[in-house]
Every structure is written in C-alpha cells, then in structure tokens.
Image 1 (cartoon, rainbow, N blue to C red):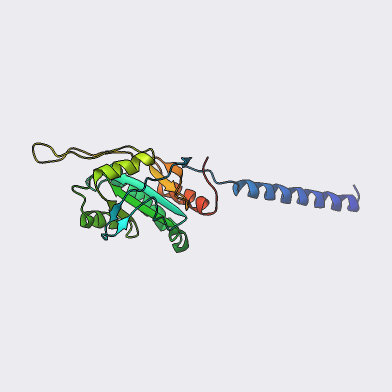
Image 2 (cartoon, rainbow, N blue to C red):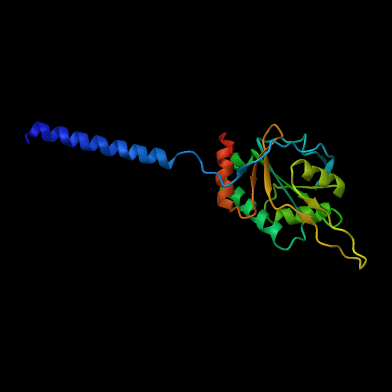
Length: 208
C-alpha cells in the first residue's frame, strides 16, 4: 500500500469514527422518554374555591402559567400525600427559577373540615412555599376532581367526634395553558422523573 492510499484510508477511518460519534450523540439526546402518561383532554370544572390567603380560586379560569400541576390530598394523610408532595418539592429544586416560574403547583384538600387555611399553608411550606393550597366545600372539591376523572370522597364525622379517613386519588395531573389536562403521574414518580418530564413539557413535548 503506497503513502497516498494510506492517507486516504486514515481519512476514511477518521470520518467514519466522527459519523459514529455524531450518531451516538444524536441518539443520546433523542426525544425525552416520559414517565408521565398522556391524559385527557379533560377541563377542570368551574368551581369557586379559596386559596390559603383567602382569595377566590377557580382552577378552571385562574391558570396563569404554561403548566399547572394538581394534586388532591389532605394534611393528616400519614403516607401517600407527604410522599407525593416531597417528590414534587424536590422536583422544583431541580429546576431553574425561570422554569419554576412557568409552573403552578395546586394542592386541593380533600379534608376541608380540618384543613384550615393556616394548617394547609403551614403544611405546604414544608415542601415549597410557592405551592398553592386550595379549599372549599367538599361537594365542590368532589365536582372538581370528577371533572378531571379523579376520585375523591371526603371524610365524614364519626359519632365518637372524630373523622374517618378521606379517600382520594393519588395521581398528579398537569394542565396546559388552555386549561386542558395533558399528563398524569402515578404515586411512584421520583423528583428526577418529575423534573425531566416538566422540562420536556416546557419545551413543547407532551407524553403519549
């Protein structure tokens, strides 16, 4: 093999290696693999509720960010609610200030008899002070949940004076800027998975 042929072979091998590297890079940065599932399209019912500051709050009309996350639960919940809210709080800490400014997290209590505005606010602040707490008559809360195809059953007062345990869905739902549900996460979702999905959705991607 003469020198000219050797040079051509080296150039060809280098070129092939560069193409392979580019292909590998493109594959690594391919479409985001969502943890969330596509959901909807469901629109939240127009229901008059109240946030922890005492201001009126209607999930069907007051959305002000590209994404709104909604979770139904109660502050006395021993396990599922703290687990979900902890992951969401950690997810927000993984995002930039610009990204979190485009996401609203709304926690709707399923135990309005015990979750006063003060109690709900103090509980939410454990996870992220930017999270919005919402309350209202349980019938309205059930209507809101039903419009998003989520299950809620409020706590009932017992003859003993206590309360039974409220029953609620453990999914988190995302609404887009048009007030339409587009994604849903289950209780096993980690903060890293939430953060990755939210970043992708802010960039225009949606789960299938």
